[in-house]
Amino acid sequence: MRRRIVWASVGIAVFAILSLLTQRKARPAVPADDANVSAVSAEHRVRKAVVDRPEGVRPAPSGLAAAYAPGVVVVTNGVLEPDLRHNFDPRPGMADHEGWERYREEMRETAKHGEKGKATFHVVDTDGNSVAGADISARFFGDSGARGQTDADGLFTVEGRTLNGASLSYTVNKQGFYQTRATYQLGKRGYRCLENGRWIPWNPTLRVTLKEIRKPIPMYLKRVSLPMPVRDQPVGFDFEAGEWVAPYGRGSSPDMQLTYTWTTGEDSWRRHDFTVEFTNSQDGAYMAQKDEYCPFMSEYEAWQDTGYAKRFQYAYERTSDRIIQDSKLGEHDIIVFRVRTEADPQGKIVNARYGKIYGPFEFAQGREKLVRFTYYFNPTPNDRNLEFDGEHNLSDPKWRGPDEPR
Image 1: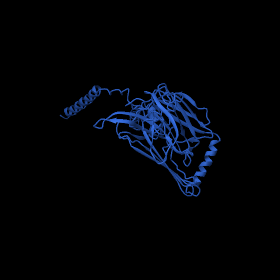
Image 2: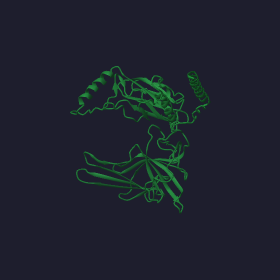
Image 3: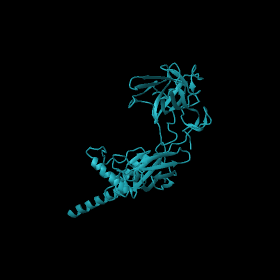
Image 4: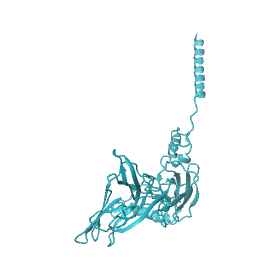
């Protein structure tokens, strides 16, 4: 009896093992990754597959997994502060001033032999997809640098030394894209950026965007430098004519109204107020930031409907020894505008013209009170495209301007 029970138990165990083996063979294969998935999504999957493995069987990450591994500092288009693992206060008398002085001496000693640097570039398009075969030229300050192409994952690694400098400059090119050119600052005053003769963070991933050349078109492009004809009164400016409207110029459409006011007082005090206004009921503009790593610095298209403001106010106020207020449109800013807008009875836009103004928008320039700005104006109604072709300037055929495809 007891022997029959033992044999029955063995039979049940064998049956269970055979069932498990059969299920494993019948399990469907994991579908292949979609070829068009973005590099960022692919990187997350690769990193998860590596990180989630048990200790002892985890291989060293490579490719995108290494470029985005936990602990790797990722720099987007060259605009990230250095590793902030130690923040000094360099001002005399502050708590850690002595630490900062010791660090400066350490840097001086290291600089005699050159500081080692390493970085990995990950080149992507505007959708985040890796760009293979992009030409890269990278140079640590004082070093001869390196040239090469990105691999299938859009990666390229450079290693070298800096001599009497703290920067890594790079240029990225590929047919069909705008050139990307920028400098990554390895060092920053007040922060520990060197350790054992190496720049830290060591081997950051520099994520570099290449903007596609999509649909560049001819545009009106002009760099304006005009004296304000009157004070304390709005003056219309015509983007197509590139001039003030009558009676101050040959323009006929007051696309934008500019009002300039200045006052002076005792002790060399003076204040300049400047207003940009769009008076047509459906006209307006919005602010954006330049992509300064690229010659095509704006977005590709203006917004379609909402988000347009009617009025922008700027002020500059100072005395003989200090600036009290300076709210000019800066050199890093863009104004995207919509003018000559027409709408149907339900308020739907049926006709409009679009363009952009590149900062800085300067005023209070000299005795003539000059106003200076650069703008692009699309000649086609209802076309929100902001991409200038760099060749056909409808205002001045001799001047191509900064938005030049390469």
